[in-house]
Amino acid sequence: MLKLCSFLALALLMGKGASADEGVPVHGFADIQLGSSNNVPADYETQRVNGFSLGNVDLFLTPSLGGKFRSLLELVMESDKVSGAIGIDTERVQIGYALTDEATIWVGRYHTPFGAWNTAYHHGGQLQTTVLRPRFLDFEDSGGVLPTHGVGMLFHNSTNLFGTAKLSYDVYAANGSRLANVDATTGKAVDAGSGLDFNYGKADRAGGMVGGNFAVGVGSGMFEGLKVGVHGYSTIVNAYKNEGTAAIDKIGNSINQTMVGGYVHLDSDNAEVISEYYHITDKEDVSGAVERTSELYFAEVMVPVGSWKPYLMYERANLDKNDSYFYGQFNAMNYDRSTVGLRYELSPTTTAKLQWSATHSNDLDSSGVAYGDYSTVLSQIAVRF
View 1: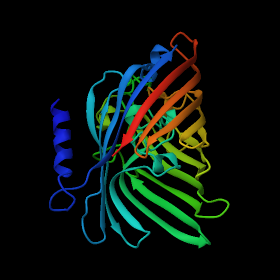
View 2: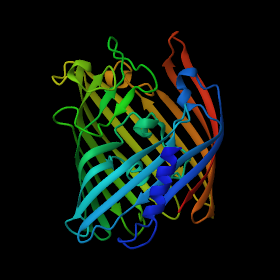
View 3: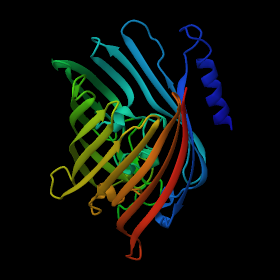
View 4: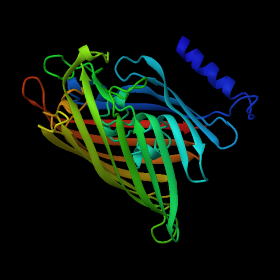
């Protein structure tokens, strides 16, 4: 309750007025979900849906700093999927300097710029067509298996190519991630708290993570709204037997990880298409003596009919579970999922969604039996303000 009161008090203070002296205008997002799931395995407790749930309450702020300086703050109140406990996270804290109208250098905590989804859709449910993000692209504290956040430096720029075509790109350097709370002997995830930690306060080791995202977009004509891009990063990940980062807590070899892939994003009045591919290579030590590969991809298609927006999405994670990187994450799962849904625009700022998903997992439980299939029906009312 104290956290909730503090969060609301901060929102009121920031929203007191429109000028820099009186306060900062507050914009944000909120949503409420209702759903039910069937045959969800006990080990997938975070995937279970039953009854009502509060989504994120997201405050999105862009305080004016004057001159060429920029800022972006995103504060999110969210509930734990299993315990129901409410927490408050500073999901993005960025300070930037505009070199030109198109080029900006940012420092702070940001969403890692890979693909289209993680750069376009953030913590506000009203932004994205579907109720949920692709499973493997969930945020770290929600069970995602990729470093969707970074703390470091980010450079963004765009330049004209020909006609209305533009090249936009991001290059970045961040602290990189670590695996926390893994078994000291086996390296296996211990519980739902085992997973990625993107090192909010300090780098886990020298080198961190470096990467880039390059895309060509078309502003008008037959291919208006089309963006085609490539992305990738390189990082070194350590695993720890608890939440600490002391050398005594480190287990196993460092994981030298490289991700390369590409994506297509069409955002027009006639259709929305998003398809992304990630190829991950993990070397069990820096020398590369042991190398394992995995791939993840999804595709989502939506064709609007007036205020109605029917959509389909397919996603698949094909992971090498002998890979220490995935073996140490509780929510890492081999699966394929099909989703069919409908979004309706109740107003320019309010949407209603209803979707059904069928998930198949080939992973084996502790008895050596495949988890099999489960399904979920989920509805959502999402707003922005």
